Amino acid sequence: MTSASSHILASIPSPDRGVWELDLGVFTLPLRAYALCIIAGIIVAIYWGEKRFVARGGQPGTVLDVAVYAVPFGLIGGRLYHVATDYYRYFGEGKNPLNALRIWDGGLGIWGAIALGAVGAWIGCRRKGVPLPAFADAIAPGIVTAQAIGRIGNYFNQELYGGPTDLPWGLEIYRRVNEFGQEDPLNGVAIDHTLIDGSPVHPTFLYELVWNLLIALLVVLLDRKLRLGHGRAFAIYVAGYTVGRGLIEMMRTDPATMVLGLRINVWTSILLFLGALVYFVLAGRRGPREDLSVLTAPSQPDATAKDEAEDETGDESDVDTADDEDAPEKDTEAAVPQGDRAEADDKADDTSSDKDVPSKS
Image (cartoon, rainbow, N blue to C red; front, side, top):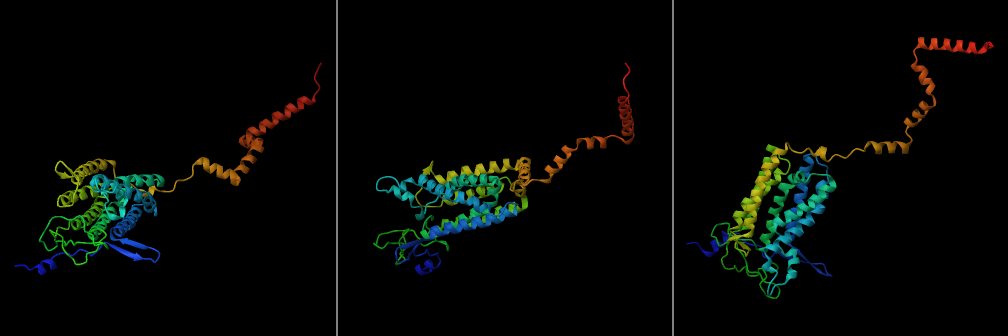
């Protein structure tokens, strides 16, 4: 029979806390693991996306410039999606609606982040003259890798786990308390490592982390082999991610909004999977991958701008034109053949002689 100690050693322990208080003297700064993981994921996505974008012929610095718009939009969209789908956490009797603004306490819906983040990316791409589908293809594996890094934050928060399990990778969930001795899973500290009822549990956040990394690898391999363009690499990311997310979502035990017996994120995954497949097929008719070196090349000045620049700098062509206008006769003589010019001179002499003889009355 397996002892309790061997059972614990066969499980994955959770961190004691997810927040560290940094004493700066004047005030205390909370360092939240979840927020740090989100920031780390954003950095990785931008760095990797930049390398892929430049490798496809794009201008360096474009991904960072677009991220200035996409990241804030994405964070807002992710929080809005979370609040909309988990409204019961923030609204109703005994709830504080202002907690919906506490984005640092976790709760970002990936599809809200993608949807509103795409709006921000569209704005940035318009300003940089970059097609949004080409930009999306470049950043696709970086985004899903950023999601994987973000799941590490769920580990520190002791959230998004499944039902009880006796598998070796079962996750221990500890009872955390705050400074007042009250239970506080997010901000508290596990003092005596007391396990909550049902622990160890399925670490569904870990399953999704591994799945996300596999999808990132899949997108890179297919992109290299098929030279995907026009948003098709991004479509593979969406389709692949939603397959795993839908299955893993059904393993989770945290409260969620239910629609027709399924968690709302399962329905979202189904609809987005179908949409991604349709887009992948239709986008394949647009031809080969976009050449970003042509699409993002600096524009050349038009003829009007060039003429104005020449007028301002006093181009020598103006002097040549003036000289030509001052000597029209020279050009005319040069155009007359030599024999015809001699005959014309003789006629001129005859006419001159006639004028010198007095007319008869």
